[in-house]
Length: 163
Image (cartoon, rainbow, N blue to C red):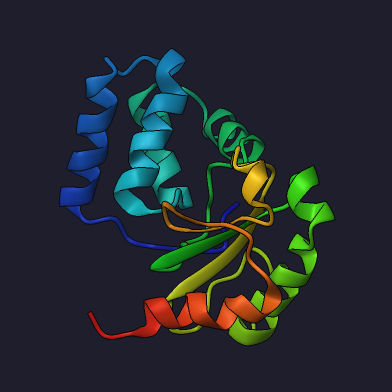
């Protein structure tokens, strides 16, 4: 299933069980449970999915099917600063692919990967609803508009400064 193997602490298992209980261990609430679990862990490794399946009394295959179907969910850890490049029509037409290529070149990662230091991860998304600002890049929750390839370095430097 997932390529990342982790060992969940008793505390993390208890937190997951509490999330499931919040939704009355109702398998009809699987998506809500997964959202909260991903918020807690940053991603949904196999071990987390196993606990959720057990608590909601549903099959692991069902949980995995939901996780793998919805693009919001991820089974690999994201970087400290997840970068998403919008590839919706307006952004694409205005050069989002060149912006993405520059992020890949500077960070030396492909889409879906995380830098070795765990600082940045790179992904694409369909539309952030800011078409007038195309091409759009999101770093975490922060939106950058009208990004050109030569602006990528400045964006990355913003997150490389010591806090």
